[in-house]
Image (tube, rainbow, N blue to C red; front, side, top):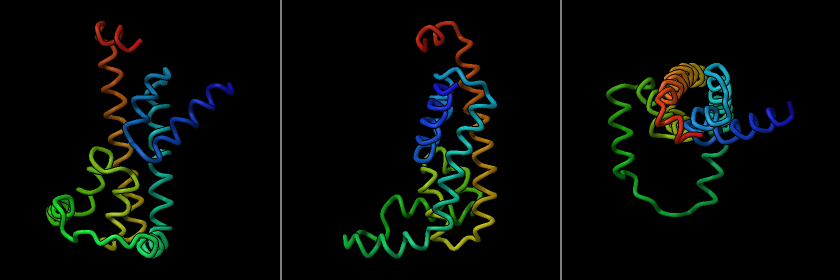
Length: 152
């Protein structure tokens, strides 16, 4: 049981920073779909919760610590603004697990001034959706004999 908890905690910790770690490592650990969803969503939502409520503090203190003069409109910034203008909060939330990290997506939404409740709700729906899709996809892919042999 303690080995299970250590594995779960390790995957959870990685999900704080990288969403895809949950489905991949959960499948490698032999977790079922529900366990994969649980560890992935809990890891992502912990990051979202922390950065939603501590975002302003990080923004103030981080800019004081780092005095690097960066471009205001890089290619990445322009693309983020395009997604924001076209799809709003749901576009950023749905792209967070795919392209952005849980921290990155939360910081983007916080910087656009989205209400905390809306950030938490949209990120929760996004995390549930993508963890289900990734978890189910990995489960189905592992039913293919060649991939199963490569995985084990």
